[in-house]
Length: 113
Length: 115
Image (cartoon, rainbow over all chains, first blue to last red; front, side):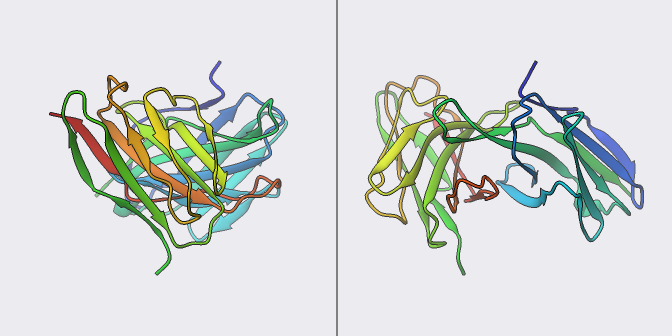
């Protein structure tokens, strides 16, 4: 099993739709979680951190479910500009007690007019 | 404006040649990272540095070298020993702490190709 798994998609949705992605992780000791967005041939950009109590930033809502070991990202009222790949990132300590980031392969979203 | 600057944006390497990718940040971040991204694959960590004059190998360090002589700068050299260097190279930085809640911020990348 991969350490971080995402459905690659693509998710094709019409403008205005609500869409949700999940990301599962295998290490129960994981401590920090993030969602990034990456446009085609560009660098990843931080979308939001994911807090234990869940958090919202405008049309975007992130949730963490530690019991089932997944995080989710909900996008409401999708815009054409939301079309991108969404990367899930999970952090944990490795055997040497150093911070380690584990990147998912991403979920592709296409918002259509 | 604070940020991370990578140069060049595009780079071509000849057989047997070493090339160096530049990464500079003015965010006063302690930690810096180099990743490589190939089509259909996730980001893979090459090297990282948590403080000046110290760096650690990541998951795919073979064929690469780095230095961290200044806090602001973390250049990556792709040596001739790296047989498949064609990729999108991303530099990132973050504040460093043991709380694990510091996200990474990226430069806009360098695309390296073999001539």
